[in-house]
Image (tube, rainbow, N blue to C red):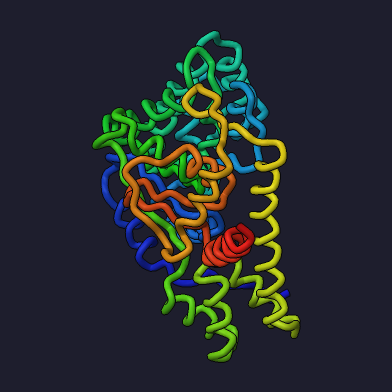
Length: 362
């Protein structure tokens, strides 16, 4: 299979490079719809960083984290070997060899000391601050945590995520030791943290959205798409990178592109109908802010049907049914701009088709 090359994202790349070229001062949230290319962008940028920077990339995607042990095992890159007690000497000895790391390096004996403590977070943060403090004397630490919302509900004494945010504020705004990037496709997580008073004036947001029309056309040009093929791709996929890659692979394999887009369309319609049918047959509820709330089918249908003639809408406050549809990855909420919209062009078309059939029956 032909490799699909990274494409464009010049605006987002410049935003991020401008940030890391300046003194650390704010937590940076990188957000956008699912499969819009956030992780691809971060991977590309990490690979392009000069030796001036040391990226620490922690990916929580697909990790089952239920307690501190799970989290610490993901956060740290444990180095087995001799006993090391001096964090400063350990950090200085590693500076020359540090490249791209999947966690924060720590000697096994220090990791075990942290794990044995009653207040693990205090010693964990103390170690990271001292380690980054030493690294920052010669290079710039860049901490990137992908899909941080995975630990959103992890509560030990208090929610771990709030302890982390307080620590990130200390690393960036107070101590200026490291850049901190939080990458997420969970738009409700962004909606929640965007409204948190503790992050006011302490964070910034970079949106990585689907490609616009011109970028989509340029991207498909690189793979020899005809005008008709490009228009067909835009009609069904919009600028969703993962959907466009599917069509590129279809073309490379000399398969029918028209059959492919219609198959994707039918699959998405079926998935949305399943959500509605399950709600109708057995009902559903959503736990929100500590309360379990019953989901009303009629209101879900109204929320979906509101996109029959529009592609997005502004909101002041989300309804529980809209939140439900966001959690089911049908809708996407952009809290920074106050916009609610389907996750993709394919979702929009599927929603409209399902609603037309349902309301025609009625």
